Image 1 (cartoon, helix red, strand yellow):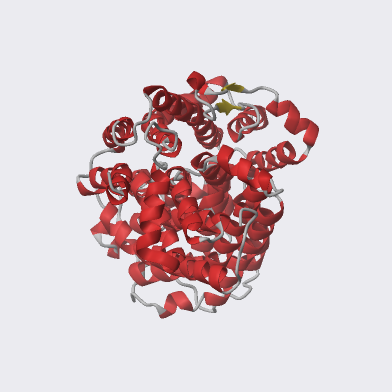
Image 2 (cartoon, rainbow, N blue to C red):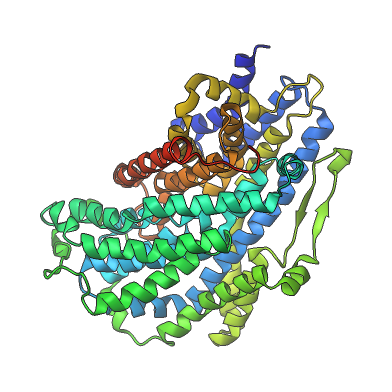
Length: 563
C-alpha cells in the first residue's frame, strides 16, 4: 500500500466517528462500538498487527477506562451528595444577594463558580449545574444554557482535577517511547509533562482574559430587550478585571504546582477577589442591566419547567460557607496528596495493574484507586456525610443517581479508550509500518507544512466536538499532534499543549455537553440554537490560540527536551 492509502485508512476511525455522530446523529453508545470494530479490522489487516497485540491494547484501554470512570464517578457523587445534603442550595442562595445586575451575576455564577465546578468535577457538569442555578436566579432557560456552555473553555483542560491532562495527554501519548528518548537526552517524563502543563496554562490564560466579557456580550446581544452590543461592552472594565482575577492564579498554579489544581484554585481566588469588589460596585457601570420582563420572553427562551424565584428566600439548613466546605476540603486533600511525599507514597501503595499484557512488551496498565482523584473525592464525600449531618437514605440516593450516570459514560468509554490504544500501539506489526498516528502525521505535515501550528487547536476542537470530551480528544489526537510536530521539526510539547487547549475550546460546541445542559432546564431539542451562539466564542478562541501557536514557534522559538 502507498503511504497515502495507509494515512487515509488511519484517518478512517476518526472520520467514521464524525460521520456517525454528527452526520447521521447516531448515539455514541451505538457509534463508538462500530468505530472500535472498524479500528480492529484495519489493525489486523492493513497494519498486520498480531491478534495478541490488538487484545493486549484493548485490555490496556479497559484498565485506563476503569481509572477514568473512577474519577468521573467520584466527581458526580460529590455533586449529588451536595444536592441531597442541601449544600448546592446553600451555595445558590449565597449568590442571590451579591448584585441585581444580570451581567455581574453571569460573571460570578457562570464564569467563576462554573470554573470551580469544572475544576472539581469536569465532564460537562459546570453547565449542568450553572444552568439551573441561573434559571433559579431569574435567567431565561436558553440564556442560561448558552452562558453555561461558554464556561466550557478556559478551565476545561484542568477540569475534574486535571483529568484531560493527567489521563488524556499521559495515556494519549506513547509514554514509554517518549520516556526512553527523554532519558537518552538527559531529561525525564516528569519534566516534559510539566512543560506541557505550563504551556497549556499560559496559553489558556492569554485567551481566557476576555472570556467573561465575551460571555456577557453574547448574553446581552441575544437576550436583551435592545439586542445591543454596547450594553454588554459597557461592563468591560469589570469583566476584564474578573478575567485577570481568574487567569493569573490559574497560570501560576499550572506552571508551578501541576495540572490538578489550576481551575479550582484560580476560581477560588477569583471569587475571593471579585465577589467583594462586586458588592462595593468596583468598576461597575452606573446603570443596572436586566432581561426583559418574563412575560415578554419568546417561547424559545423558556424551558419545560420553571424554578420559582421565591424559593431563594426560603430558609436553608446551612450557611453558604458550610455548603462550600466540601469543595474547599477537596482542594486541600488534593494538594496534600500531590505535594506531601509520604502521603503520596502511601496512596500510591495500592496499585492494581498488569505489566506486559498478554506477553506484549511495552503494553502495561495500572490503576491507583486511592491516589486517583476519584479516591480523594470519595474521602471528601464521607466527611461531607458527617459535616452536613446527612442520613443514610440521602447518601444512598446520591450513590444510586451517580451509579446510573456512570453506566452511560462507561459504555461509550469502554470502546473509545481501547480504540485509541490500538491506534497508538499499532507501530509494532509484521509489516514494519509506522503506527497509525504517525502515518496521519506524516500525511498532514506534508500537506500543510510550517503553518500547521495555526490549525492544531482546531484539530483538537474537532476531536472534542466529535467525542464530547477534552479528555477523549486528547486520547485520540495527542499522539497525532506529537508526531506532526516531529515531522516538522518543532517542539512536540508545545504542539500537544495546543491540542489540549483547542480541545477545551471545542467543548463549547460539543453536542453531548449541550444536550446535558439543555436537559437540566427542560430545553431538549433546541441544541442547534445554542451551538449557533457558542460557535462565536469557539472561533475567537481557536483564532487566538492558533496565533499564539505561530508566535510561540516562529517568534519565541519554543523548544523542549526532545529537540
